Image (cartoon, helix red, strand yellow):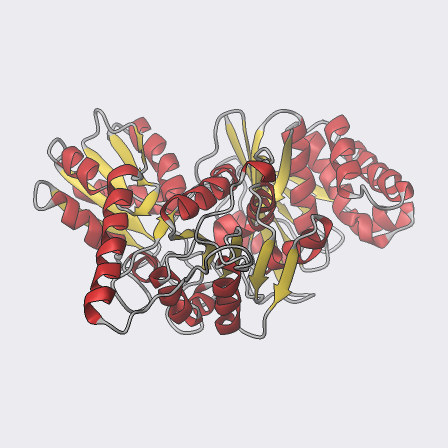
Length: 349
Length: 179
């Protein structure tokens, strides 16, 4: 049965159903309802909810808990995500699985609480130090966000990687009917063979991001790179919407992609054939497919709620095969369908 | 077909809940819906609004350029949103608070003396449900059965009397719209 839910609550309940029983967090708008939901929900499912004193503490609680091989998560918003970056880098180095939800704020610094997509660089290029990657998923509806939670944990454990679900205040705060995902069976979740669960009766295990010997540390780094290569080969996801006959293809993700779907219909009614290419994984970015598409379309327009962050990946994929244009709003200003349509008209005319 | 509604007023007039009940009722009628709040550092007495979209096809943008219907609960909301209303659009006004007419002449206007009717029923807070009733009747977007179900869902863990009171307010609001 479908339920009318807020995005933050749908994501939280989906995480519980995916088997997450350890949540650490610190409230920050526009995602505080997620933390609040977990505070109420975790005791009901015999899980643990822990509100830390800061996001720096949150990420280190997550680090410790992830070492035990359980499904752990946190949720935050831009400034909080920035505070977590040191711990994220450590966790990536220690090859720990965990899920982060970042409900982005607008602008650098404090940022306002309205929808924005200005943490693309931070999420996909490594906001922390070192040669690491994290998988970044970008849902565009509440249903898709809820459905992604289980997948996020599966990817995290399959590759021993961090996964971020990157959304904005629109997906966090709006309500939409959601069919909640099915419960996963905890008994089907095998304890990983690296988990630190107490060495009683077995050899000790070690989870670390560091080796004093540079040659050994390089081996670890090469292993991470092997993993990232596999992820880039196997886990790229995207959606194509009416691109077959498009004279201009818009590239957008998350909330913006959703708005563009309406633009595609508006434009087609006024005789302009517009298509949408929507990356679902922001890392790994769908370079190959977008490269293919750019061979057959003259103009590509990237639309973001930022001043052009994904734009750089789009240009890398296109490599001059078609003209790349950009339209963006930021600081919590959401572009309207007509506004985007106007920017398309300027290009095709 | 996709229909969009903007509901705006003072914080405390129940505009967010009104939007939620409209969205939920439409969902129970089998339609797609989105409910998008304006939010920011809001306070009681400040202005608030939400956008509800109802459709029998998938809803893309939850943001609208020009809504089909505006429900304005105070003067600033009327002035702000009548400008963007679709041509020949519908506007419902809380005439207990709004003592003037919209400046546009192409609009279909419904004046609802919501505060007074709410007082007559015996609870000042249900002015939003009176307005919602008038909206349901004026637009035909949602049905009374679905509104009842949405109210039951919303007040699930509360006193049953609360559902009845709200439903009574909705019915009274519906009676105000005759054509």
